Amino acid sequence: MNQGTKVVIGLVGLVVLVLLVSVWIGGPSDGNLAAVGGINNGEANTPGSNAPLAQSVTFRVNDQFPGRVALISSAVSPAGGWVVIKKDQAGQPGVEIGRKFFSPTETIGNVDLTEATVEGNYYWASFQTETGTALATPIRFYVTRDLPEQKG
Image 1 (cartoon, rainbow, N blue to C red):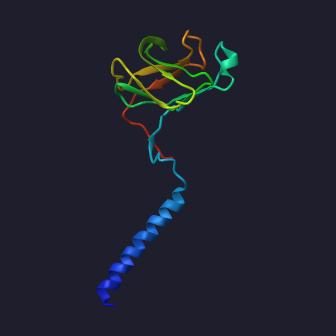
Image 2: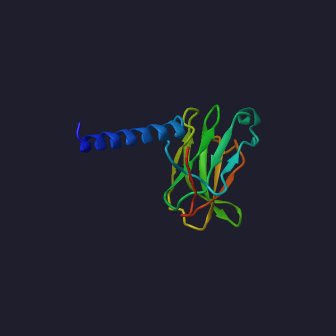
Image 3: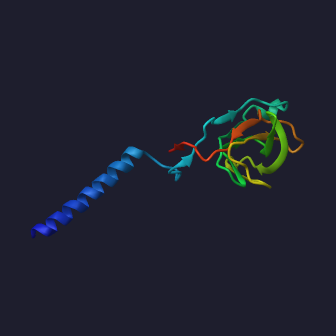
């Protein structure tokens, strides 16, 4: 083998080694290589007035980027439930701007909004039954373009 071939083989081997080590250090992946996190990482598993359903309920909404969709990190209920997004009105939930039903098997997802959220404003997310009974404590979240990146 000539010197050029040895250099190419050495470089290819080094690249393969670096890739293997980076995969090994990163651990197993479920396909979610990077996700946007939140500043407040709002999470609620406080039962609402419907305690029998709410015993195994979890609900999580992080701070969001501005736009016409809200990302729900976790909406878990044995019977499913509605995630409702509302504008903030003097620190309380105000006008509804979106809702989506999350089935027991659909635990994360997006809620399409009738109007875009605005950077610098607060909004509310609630998890409830079809009749409006709270499954978890409503979460107030912030809209900003400056969100930390969370890997995992």
